Length: 309
Image (cartoon, rainbow, N blue to C red; front, side):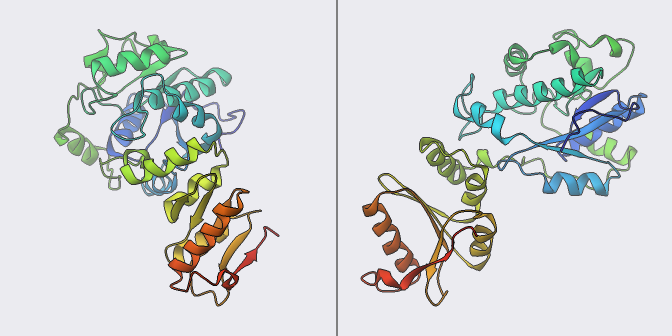
């Protein structure tokens, strides 16, 4: 978690770190120019931090991670600029991240927020119009710097005064030749693929998250569960059912105070039922027996194996 007060006075700004090549290069560009950004990863179940932490460590970077799930839900439910192809609120998401970083900057007397964005690389959030939309949502647009495309953008967007005499880069578009050359220069050997790490860009996952939102589910653990299970929707209830041994173990680890169900001989899936509807619960038991390859006329075969104790 980000400390409430940054005690290391050597840091002069916040860098939004993703673990991707652009994010890494922009961090080292700032270091090369004499700045000392604090790399930060904002985490939710939709973009977990494990990969970013691993890449940061392999490149000798100390990464700070903050969970923002509770605040992020509001953005996910009602983004000002809507969604991408699936449930990804890319423009609102980027502005939200920058504003979160801005809060840290202002609280700690720092000077800027930097990102690894590349002009015209992504069609939704990194075009001129997309960046203008992001700018409208920012608390302090004058604090933002995009080191990889700053020389292209400096005449179109307000520039942070501390960078007025600095020469940044002019990278544009989806090609990566320049970045790969810079990776050699900065001895960057480990980075994540350019496909992106946001699960909300995937159709099946987004459909599950939409169901949770429609049922007004707010507990983060359920948003973690859906990645590792079948999500069953009944009239007034939901159920999470494991698909294999690994799923079962993950559901058990995340269950906390939930009542967990499984077939008596434990040769079937683990299930968690959310709701109070008796008809839905009976249908849940039938589904559990079906996935256990047992006769659905014998619901007594299903028993509680945990109650959160």
